[in-house]
Image (cartoon, rainbow, N blue to C red):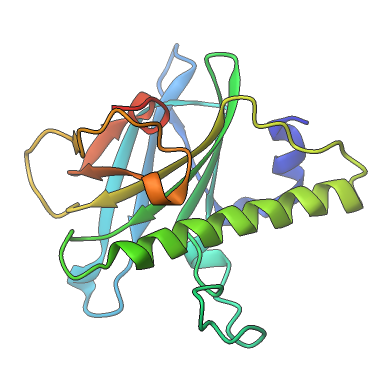
Length: 191
């Protein structure tokens, strides 16, 4: 199954745009997040070097928490802010991204629940494609990746990850990235 099948599934308005660089097969995407408070709670994070064929779904703005159906006592109403589908280095990836303006006052367990909710949403999308498009199971050849973007209010500092070289292929082992931007490869590769 290809990104094309996913493009048919998602409403175009629910997706962030990859701004392609002229003469290149990569571009830039700006992820944004609105806090629950004042206008100053709006913040952005830039990802450079994104393959131009990538599909970036904004779950936070377009998939409300299903609290009218589920109780939410175990975090089942949570979901990640973004889900990125991308072909990169001949591999197909699904990348779950949770954004936090600061690294303070956010329990790691809450972020894990949000990333796990994004993974569940992904499973639902696979089931929709199989059930309604009669498509084969989505093959994520490169694997799943999980990232927490924190401290996006920091100005003029290089991107930092948590320094671990462990593969961030589960919500509990998410890659923690601080700063205002990163390169797409940093979302894929450990370290």
